Amino acid sequence: MKIVLFTHPNFFNSQSMPRYANFIYKEMGKRGHEINIWTPKAFFYNFSKHKTFQKWLGYIDQYLLFPVVVRKRIKTCTNDTLFVFADQALGPWVPLVKNKPHVVHCHDFMALRSAIDKVSGQKSVVTPAEVQRVNDATGKPIYTLTNKKGTRNNVADNNSNYAFDLTAAEKVALDKTKFYIAEVSPGFEKLSDKAIVDRMMDRKWVEGAVAKARDQARAFEEIAQRAKTDADIRAAQASREKMLDVADMMEENLRAPRADASRKQQGPKTRAEIRNNMITNRTNRNALRED
Image (tube, rainbow, N blue to C red; front, top):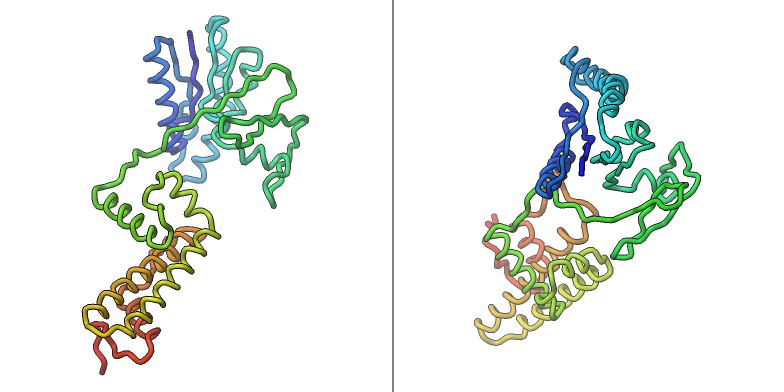
């Protein structure tokens, strides 16, 4: 098969889209297809070094010059050529091949959902004449704009933008976290990573787990107060600290609606001081000076 792949220009300064386009190019080539990449060249873009001016000059390259080039190239293409758009943002070029076989890769549906009032506070200027709801294998709804019968829609999972793998230290920390949370939620350490993520995204479950951890911490504190030997006192205090660590970790890392970019969190000494103040009729056991 002969394929023409439309991609974002190099001066678009994207990371994920060039990777995705390169992924298509390499994989289709491996399968024996003849594939060519069509992308705008920087001409007017190079007339300025100012980023704002470059942006608007780049639009001239993309939407005035490039269509002229495409119309000329299309005349040399055979009728069995498939035109592929690596991203739905390249939509302004689709009319150039509207009467030819073509495929548009859509990576998100925010604009389409906005057009049909599915995004609160966002309204698209253009309202689709018809909205067809399609379900993928997981049953999650996607939305496509079409007013023609026979339109084909297929869902495929994209690769991650970056290669991801846990370091040895991170794996140890994850296993330790699973073990700790299992203290308040039996069986947690046996869950799959996906199941763990689902649990952590469930606010009610997190709030319940935090409450259980703090209840157990108070119970261990009472045990420590009633204990007769130093060994029993230390064991109860260690279990109490573990439960408070679980509660603190879950509150700081799981319940937060978004990551704290400042990375500002209470330090171990601050947390220890707060915990010490929660203990009644006890001397200060923290390694802090008292002047």
